[in-house]
Length: 194
Image (cartoon, rainbow, N blue to C red; front, side, top):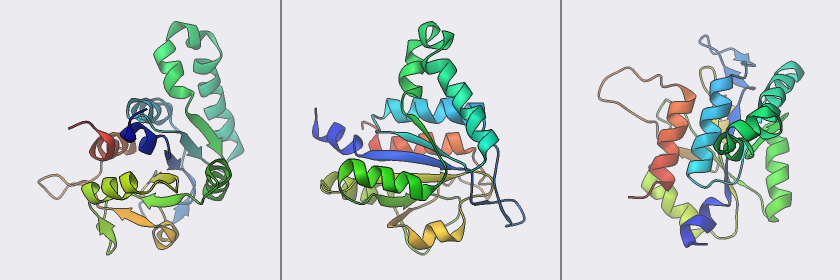
């Protein structure tokens, strides 16, 4: 295992469906989507990450996500598309970010460092090269990169984050990427081979 592989094996991603904002900045729970399950797990597998957590306290959404994941891990889909099975093997469904952090802390024997993402600049935002360097030199802690659905993570996530990644920006004013696109870009910027 290379040094880069060791670093990435201690990094997981989480897609949070609650608590997040809606377009009116009300705290809501958003729906799990099939595309996010598949595409983010494929990106996480491509870049050698440890796990992909779907975070929702909504029981019906957990059941839906579980059914989709089981189909590709255990059902007909596993034999039909082994590459998709390999990606979906990373998926874990959790009730809350606290549950995820507890699991990672127990697994690694150290608290996970929380890295948040968002479409807006934050006073504590740091660049991708700096974050990649921090993770490369920290051999003691696991990392959890957190993505929000809807209109983004609540301020509580940013307040408790160890690190806040700078937003992805295009040349114009418009900045509303799908979360699966943003996740793929961020993983590439942090872990891609250059």
